[in-house]
Length: 384
Image 1: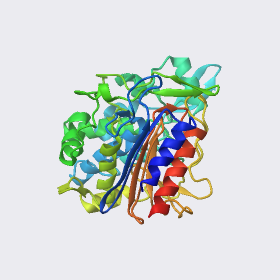
Image 2: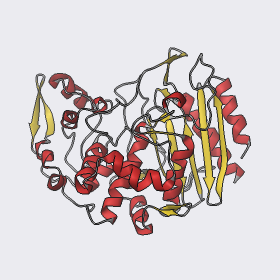
Image 3: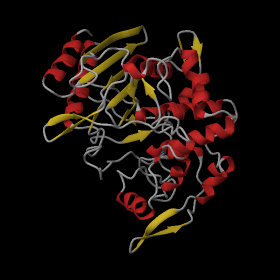
């Protein structure tokens, strides 16, 4: 797979990103590792395999794995009512509309469960994917979940009745709080003990520890045909670690995590999840509901998102799941997701491939990053 190295270099050379890291593994081990470009435009630090990235929504797969671990240990179930573990959930309302600029709120008709939170069927939707949510937050001066404030959990009323739709938002942040309450451990300590330490993921943390800050990639934004530095990162020492966005990691570390999932819960002699737990984690948890198009209300942050529009897509406990083979690319049943700064992963149990592509720029899923994703993935499967 050394041909991937030239692909990375070529895309940096034509200006698709300031820097990129890619890692690929098969059941036999690491098949490719490569980096191109720089950590920060105008800087002299080359992008390297130990570069640290803000993972943002790639944190969600770890949060779902933490919940799966609690299920395995008998602390929770997929159908555990959220309010049984977190009484504060009873205060969450559904947004029915507005009277002028005053939000109209009502009580949801269905009780929320762990499954709703994990699979984005709870009605909790980010403000940049839902116009009503953005309007609600402006009217109430509610803090965004990225603030790290505990109060921000209540900044998001439901956009629809539980279990009736799929849309993307803060359910995993509530899920992390369920794990904390059920386990009696703060989520950062829980993940470190359950996954990071046994798997040797020493560069995956909720805070920049040791020399991680010195290895951190700068975020950038592409606007009006040129690149600029952009400041966006989880707040340090927050009141709560949001499992939707709080992690820092490296390409090799995150590859270790998804290799563990592809390998049925164990890697390099360390078993962190039972095989049946991983089967549950990777199964369709949305029933008849499908993952649809996400329309962006914040174009500088993200383009519209419509993964694999030619087929029906489902959501497992922690990942997007495509239901059909994609010509020249991943097979049906592959699990994937991404972070807003264009970090991306997939693992394909059928083909035996796990891969991570790490960028650090906005907008999310712009043409720049999509060109890189497509070229790398096609070359991975061509090489195989």
